[in-house]
Image 1 (cartoon, rainbow, N blue to C red):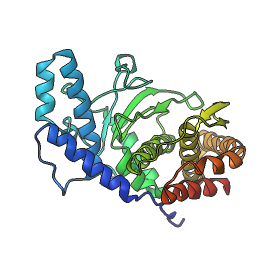
Image 2 (image 1 turned 135 degrees about the vertical axis):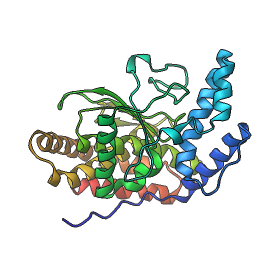
Image 3 (image 1 turned 90 degrees about the vertical axis):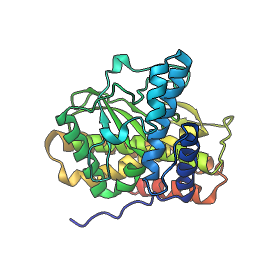
Image 4 (image 1 turned 30 degrees about the vertical axis):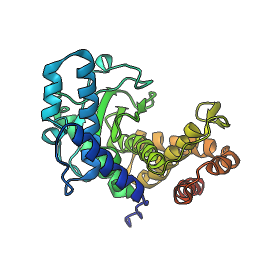
Length: 301
């Protein structure tokens, strides 16, 4: 089978954002930013260090604050495991002990002095998921926008899988899994897609009008342009991946992914008019067209 054409995730404003933000954060830690380092990796890990240091400062925890000061990568470099898209940090935090605060509507985990890597089986699963996604054209997306993976609950195939990303910790993915790399690859792509779009909107200075809403078939409710466009970007990415990966799946996994793709086709078809209207709210023509291209490709599946 020929190798699928990789989707184009290169976007110079995002690259510039990664370098500038990392330089600023490292400046707070009085640490030099190495221009030869992987910008996306250092960008992600610098945000973990910043978040950890801020929390330590608020709590008066001098020991933890000093640790982050000495580890502006939140020790992520030492925790990383090799994958097809570069060194990744894979952890398996206890969902019941994850943090909740005003910075996020959902629970989150920050790398810190007590962080340990996931089990050997989980590392293998995640590395295989990265390789699978890369083989089907999503390597660049995961290389730059899924640097840290937090594996949460292991569930049975067919159970509801919950995954998310938060803007304060870009490049980080939180997700349940079913112990299958093809399915995990789908969910890594979905959340990396959200991280990509968050960075794209920030780096181009796009501030979407929140007054106008659009019906989201995924939530069966009206959503502001920000949430609607996120859905119309992330779900099409998973549709394209699923259509490509199906040929190498069998049995229950193949049936599950086939059902998922069929469901997403039906949902996406109901958004065509609203999607084109919502795109007009994005003033950056290159970004607007990038979102349109992925959406149109998904409609053809």
